[in-house]
Length: 398
Image 1: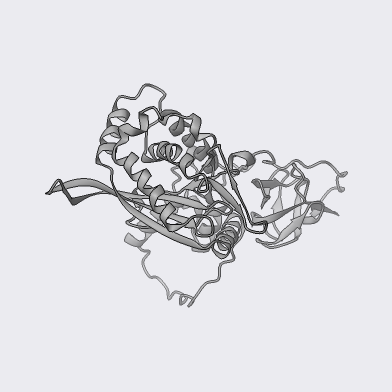
Image 2: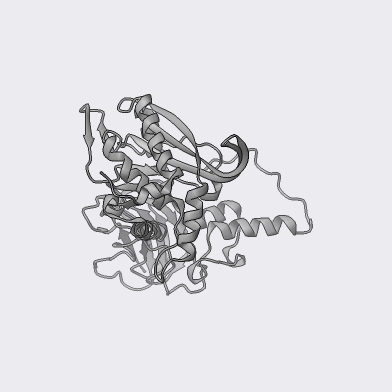
């Protein structure tokens, strides 16, 4: 018998430390070579670490949420054979985040680390859950469906169950912890003020439906967001201090000529903001295609660092769940965030008559140190005009 200590390897790009996100083994487990051990998160990706040896686990060095430095012990093994010579260990996903399981463990259900943690918290056996994601991957939605089915068909009470705990403490780890820190920093450092305007989207929705029905093969389906991007591209040149960053420590507002739109995106591991770069050079189809590309990469956990940074203003939308009004948090160090809400048919007065129109509230928040209320109102009113009369989006500028 001999012992072997697996140390956190260099995961590349100068990373000196990583956060432990989820363990997939426990003390006493017998593991085989290349079996999944632990997921760690760097500044750039979630990385799956696999075992370089076969043996029995004697100790795990750290808990989820703890930081581990490169070269620090992660797992201590007891080996049945002589300890192997030190070898270079390459993470299973050092270049791109890999949430799928290794092929060496085909009997283990496919699921992202965040889904596994939630299933464990809910005491759900993932073998009982049907995955609807790519390759049968289990998603948060699949867990919701499983819970709903279980509620409709509860197990018969065969024995007294343990009373439910009065509360449960869940430690924020991984991307969720970073989101929490980022949101707290933005809210603490930026004096937000909100501005909400009602917009008649009837004409734009009619145009959008026509373009989607007649689009060519390979063209993406258009949502409202590419049209909002076009409206921003036409409006921001007259409001350069809104397409900007504010360095509050130096007291400097940096205005950008290029327009890099952050797209707040829900993923299985939490909120990400992939970036549509140089939107001023894109037409509505190209804007839709680029948005679909970067959002897809973010949701697949394959977005590169440059695709997740450098935005100059952020768009956030909950789609059909957009509600009536939102007050989104500005993506520091930006100075504004724009949030379209749900489009709903509502009765309105039009030319003195009651008419049913497709109405949407546009919710925005601004950094009051940089943007005055009057400027914010003029900015949103300009967007309103363009969205209510979408032909203006396609006319030449002066």
